[in-house]
Image 1 (cartoon, helix red, strand yellow):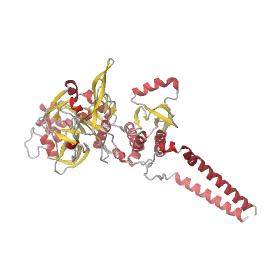
Image 2 (cartoon, rainbow, N blue to C red):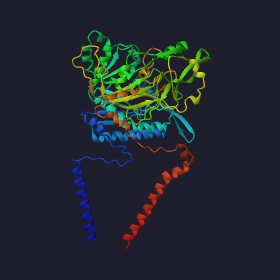
Image 3 (spheres, rainbow, N blue to C red):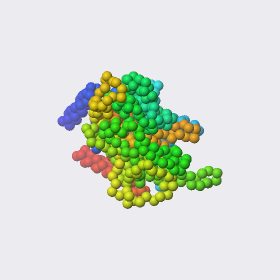
Image 4 (cartoon, rainbow, N blue to C red):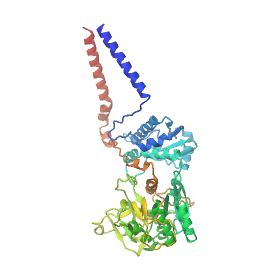
Length: 559
């Protein structure tokens, strides 16, 4: 009788605790992340973004089907992250879809995915020596109302194994989805001006950059030609923009144009400078085989000096170089191409933890110049630099394609320091026309600005996309001659987001996730042992506890 009362008391207490917890759960919400790296803890930025989701937001994830274990890991991590988003906002609805489930529609589906920019990936399934080819679409599509955007789930990393790509991709999953949600939920506010009038890159050569930026910001052309007629009105109009992009100017800026840009910066306007201080074009070199590289005077030296940096009119030659493809013969009726390392085209890797370049893959630079940092009150952060096996080549100098056959003398590169090629400047900039006669009268002239920031890149070709045979723009960073995809686009988008980001989205990129990956070779070598450990041992443990429990129960109630 005592036993029954005790059991009843425990039961009633348990029921009461459960009722109280459920009642409290209606008023308090808390999830606990027990992972060492807080993998499933959403940042405040992500939470603020999904708070704005007031109606169903649909996420279609195409990571479904038969693919290697690494992609299964990416699939699992994606699902768990989306479950976190859904836990905080039930309007987020997601599903995993196999786009190639119906074999009859396979070709049509793949074509439609290509047209939408959802490029598939061919992977090899290797199970105990048997290899098969499968197609994987590492993408998700987010739809909110009548707007949709694509979310890349797998980061491109040249030369990396699939496992390494997956680890890097998992680190960027929260940023990828938060950025996608932000793109379709948040109304555009910030305005970007693409500066024209001084021989900048043609529109079709920056088309992919403009297309990508347009998803989150208003972007338009701003021509400085009007400055000569009405500089005051030009400055007034430019001040309405939040960011100015100056993409590879080739003609000198007048003093009036410089004053307009200077006062735009002093009054808080952000800028991305992509400047070549040496006149040298790869396209013309490929046509003629040789060309003269010589300094280019853009009239910006005094302006840059005042801001705290100088772009020297030299070229960087780097052993860590990207390849170029040169015709070396004929194979039938088609030209045969061979790839050679081109030392004037550095492969630039990030070694900084800054959110703009954190975990960034290689970038392709071309005839880039070294940036010299000068002493002043402006904070300077080197975002990208050449390798420690690079050196400066003075100009003018003749550049010849036959240089690919030359073996570099490593002694010339020993003891060299990395050379900055992309720099972030932050602080209160001083006007270049401080204590000087103004090129044009301006009642609102300000000599010292408010806190501001700009990014300087000593190569205009970083923003330049190639064209296909129909003269249509290819993806920024893709080299059609070598079929390599570089991280130029991701870097530039990060630059824009960092300069204009007022909700901290870019900082999510710094999140570090430690994913343990199985050693496939070791697993194959110890396949039977692995099966025993993962399958056999748990069963043995369950049987042991079952027998022990039965024995103790019989012993207890047999008395």
